[in-house]
Length: 102
Image (tube, rainbow, N blue to C red; front, top):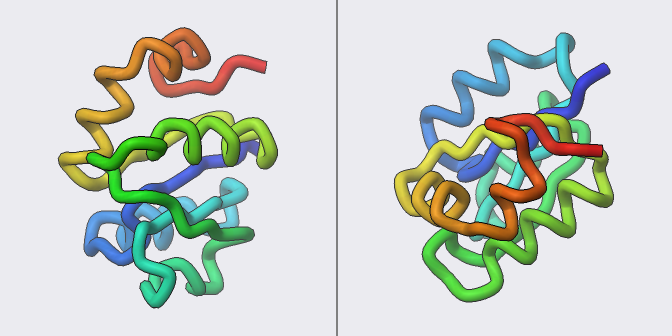
């Protein structure tokens, strides 16, 4: 089963994504708010608290989780996270389009 990391677990977009992918993919939720109810939804197989998408260290958090959880796809759902992921050379070397290299 493929593993999908969905960012900004408290956002409305991630809720729809989780509902659509649940049962078909292994889902990893991440959010910068440890109190986010989106992290603890039953659709997530695991979850992590990360730094804000526009913060120093965000990409390091994401890469570490992707390696640990063998993530195949990252689905960023906030503007800050899309920008951080797409502008980071280290993470774009690890990914082919949206799939994580193994």
